[in-house]
Image (cartoon, rainbow, N blue to C red; front, side, top):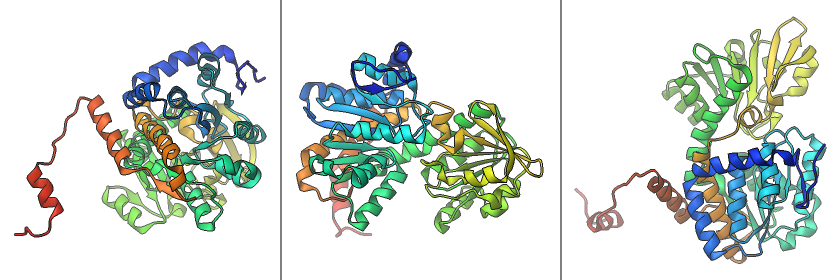
Amino acid sequence: MATKAKVACDVKDLGLAAKGKLRIEWASQWMPVLKLIRKRFIKERPLEGIRISACLHVTTETANLAITLRDGGANVVLCASNPLSTQDDAAASLVKDYGIPVYAIKGEDTNTYYSHIVSALEHHPQVTMDDGADLVTTVLTKRQELIPEILGGTEETTTGVIRLRSMASDGVLKFPIVAVNDADTKHLFDNRYGTGQSTVDGIMRATTLLFAGLHVVVSGYGWCGRGVAMRARGLGADIIVTEVIPTRALEAVMDGYRVMPMAEAAKVGDVFVTLTGNKAVLTSEHFKVMKEGAVVCNAGHFNVEIDIPALEKMSLSKRQTREFVEEYTLRDGRKIYLLGEGRLINLAAAEGHPAVVMDMSFANQALSVEYMVKNAPKLEPKVYPVPAEIDRDVARLKLESMGIGIDKLTPEQEEYLSSWSEGT
């Protein structure tokens, strides 16, 4: 039963707050760039009075972002961007210790998930923050009266950016969005190293499998897929990549992986990870030929990548054998194991990305919100990249926090790069 508090919320148990506060503080120690931004925000208050509704994975790292925004003067409300990604202790601490309204419970059903989005929108946001674009979609389809109040928003992940660009193309997007996901200091690190490590972590926690010697099928060779393939190979797995984009498939081949259609990979894979951002990547066609004991999971944003209804239909029985592991027994007696209900395995069964990489992602979020508040009147209702100066500043600050220095161009080098007259 959800617990209510003086601060508006719907969380699992406020009694978890003490544990959550310790974990939020631990994450903060590994987020030095966000710490520097928070220090400036406390002094300058650039978001004074701005109402922000954020639909993000409710984790300890997200908690530090919310606290930073609050300390910058914003009035922040947070809801979950996935039914299984909430860390209940972090949600409780945000409410009890930091006074930030949260609507998120790990394992919430679909109706509760969307009711929490509606609750976050009752805040009448001036800025939206999304991870998957469900918040903006709800505004555009069900809460259009809120549109005049909204200055703009930000989007955290690939799937959400794809959806938002489709909205802009169709002419239905009504306010500007900054695509945080597209910043180099986000997707090159969060998507690759964060997703790579946390996905493998989630699979290992859920199953206790030894990766060495396994045939691991990675579907989708974007930055997330690259990261998972890299980390699984590092543990001794044989990697098979499936793709629909020729250049990415060619990259995978030249990175040393086997590449084949899913219809072939389904016959040899031991573990399957989908990271495409699309639907019906694994279907009944593939379940029919999978090995006994095949493990199937998803690290893309939505669980539609795996055709779970088809797997249900093909099965004689289903049971939970471990936390986050469902065993489907097919009519021929073969067993297929689905992890985390097909939702983000790195957040369902593990703790999501390490704080040290989310530091850059959420630094981009905080600075992009500041940019949106300052520049919204000049922006059109379309998807914008993170300004290059923000991207560079985040990288510079991260290097400084690591004690790493780099070279600078000399005046002579700058002149050479900006001219065309000097050749051989």
